[in-house]
Length: 87
Image (cartoon, rainbow, N blue to C red; front, top):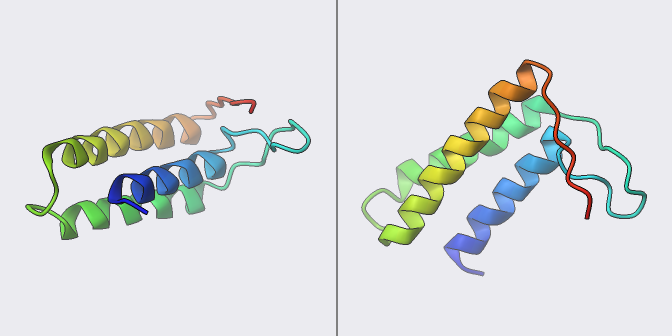
């Protein structure tokens, strides 16, 4: 597994916790779990802090962009916004 793959898996897990990804078996919405989504965001932010200066530029940009998008999505979710992605 690469660092990029690991970070993307954490971001996907956050999307699941936001309820943005439909259940692949049923196609039905998964209930949001905002505390778990927030924990994934905090974990990515922790990795960003701990790897500072050790990542190549595309990895840094990926982490920055994902954190921006996930934090924005968290605010939307707190305000009742919902997006469902069907597999």
